Image (cartoon, rainbow, N blue to C red):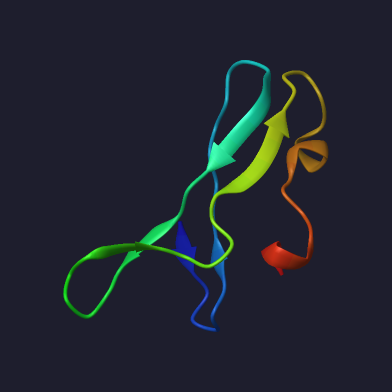
Amino acid sequence: MTDKDNGQYHIKYKMDQDVENLKIHIFFKDQNEKFVEIRGSPFSAWHKVGVSPKNNEINGPSML
């Protein structure tokens, strides 16, 4: 995960098998060092092995 220093993060992950109902939970540490799930998490995704990486990107209004 890379912090873009503008309120956005770039997250990469690698899959080696097809996944039809992937749930991605994203957490951050708050001021009390407690892990808190970000707004909109979990995010739903799917992944298909053997297709262009562009076709495996997560897109949508929550991801902007």
